[in-house]
Length: 476
Image (cartoon, rainbow, N blue to C red):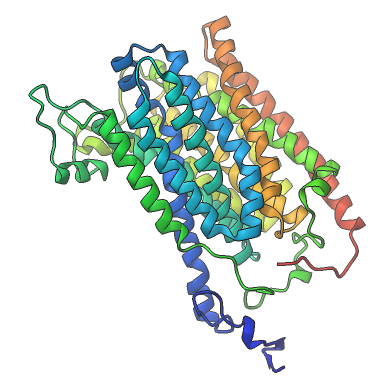
């Protein structure tokens, strides 16, 4: 066996599935960054789940459903998303990211195609089953794969690439909501619809619909096909690195953030560190969802019908409205806090992020100007997005990359809990007080609790590091 740059060289592991030479540093960088391209394609499509509100008006108008009926579909989707992350993570760990992500894209596409066929006024359960259960399961299967693959290819930049991998999920709804709202409008009364060329331009956000669309059934078919095709394209770029892979110049023994032992999920759940990480995620995500769930009506009340967007921006005006600003910085926050955590450690980054978010929520009582609304929307989005870079990175740091898929699936159930607690508690506080400010005060308090929990996570992580045997390296 010969050596290359002091590292034992084996011809049988020198090339990955695409035949790229693992020893050539330039080729290695080009190859592993294609994983991020695939991750972004997958996550942008999956992130459209957060634009569910665009379906509410068309469905309620056609079927006469109440708001509770349509919201149940969204609740089912979030619950299925969180629950299926666990088996999907296990399958991803066993079979790799490509196949499992493609299954996710297929399920998501099928959910919309079946919805177009089955949903009717007397069958609201069909929407719960198709969009909710099947679509949510598709998102759960697809979501974990890009993150797991990116971490294995970039153990030296774990926080940054996790942020990049999930940034698309944060931005998906922003790019989707405006064009979807146009296309979901019913066709003209004469029955004449817009042509395929116009559909493509409206779907890309390059043309306004002019008051007519293709209707919700045709849109479900179109969106189902696009979901399956784009996720399959992104998934085709995903793969795990070859056994024993290390980036050029990176030595795991010198990286204190690398777990010395890979723990499977039963071992992980038996540690105080995993329990504390789970609780911290609940506190942080609940506070964010409680506020974000009421962001649009609160900002609309403050602005009193005024708008940020000049008329010449047309359909692109949505990017500079409060919800659009929040969504943009939500995506940027995943990259920003991921990079910060690579520099200063995950718990320290969590503590800083939650303290900053808590202070922002407490100051929202005095928000009354356009400039203040802009900065508040940007700051809240930036910090909320950081959750989705820091917690997967921390899971890999403390429990290893080998079983990351299922391990993070269990940790991510905290977001499922937050998805129920945040909007419900926020809604109750508004109903009782008829004021938005109480929800934000409570969100701020939860952020400070999350910051305190991050300190405990820090202490437990240091204790775990001291207790692990020196010299052991994680399997890849």
